[in-house]
Length: 229
Image (tube, rainbow, N blue to C red; front, side):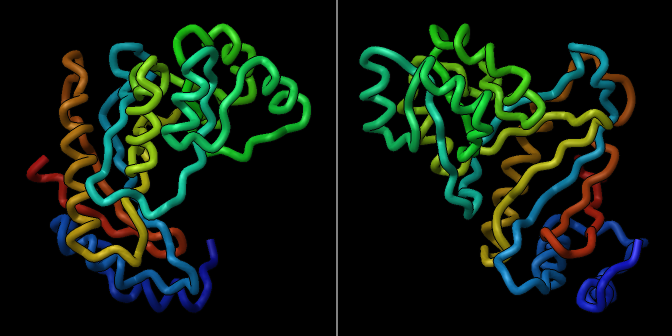
């Protein structure tokens, strides 16, 4: 794969053979970001899990102490007094059955997270084929199927991120923006890693976290030492 001049210059800052401590890796990911916009810093964690087994499917959510730096649009499926509660808590969109054709037929997807009260999951289930592949389906494990819509919305707006295995057993997650300080990014990364370590499946044999790589949106990858994890 051919990379541009800017990427190649950034790549010179990083020794590909070195596994850096968290603080050093964060500093390098910030330093090697050279795009003209505020890039997102992401972590990619290769696990020893086998997602084909239900008990090794890691999925959860954690509120990053310094947020993600992204303005998140929240859609809430609710009815009755939960509609007013969701609106008061700052949901960007609130509705029910009337949103189904808008999403299914019109392709409306102007939201980042979907929250639903349990009594609305029958309605939301009809959107499984649209929301599922995009990772937008509400799930009790990530706190997006709940009667406490106020807490769900507040957590999401405060910087809650969801982590889950992809088909290759890797977790991809944002931990902030390049404009964040090194301390903020390090705090966020450590908080995320703590949550993922706690989610280790009891049935897993062998090494849990096999590799951790940090990168900005357009920047090169920085390998993080997994020794202490």
